[in-house]
Length: 99
Image (cartoon, rainbow, N blue to C red; front, side):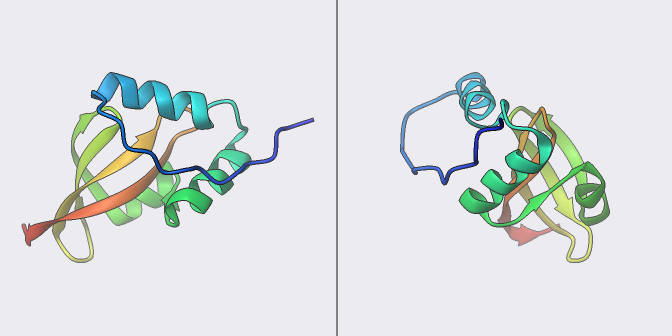
């Protein structure tokens, strides 16, 4: 029986990227894809799978768990986070200036 996704509690800790990858993997990596997406949507609202993300964004660089992207419709540069497995993107944060 699969574990039901639960909302996350926001906490603030100093962490490097490796620590953030580990936290995301521990928190969401044990869910199947549907459960992981539901849990991420509960925590972060908008979540994209790889195909959806590729239609909306162009990835410029990858620094796990972050990607630097350009939002295709608006040409707005920003960053997003991603979960490696199952692969989902979330928490797009636009930069102040457009490309």
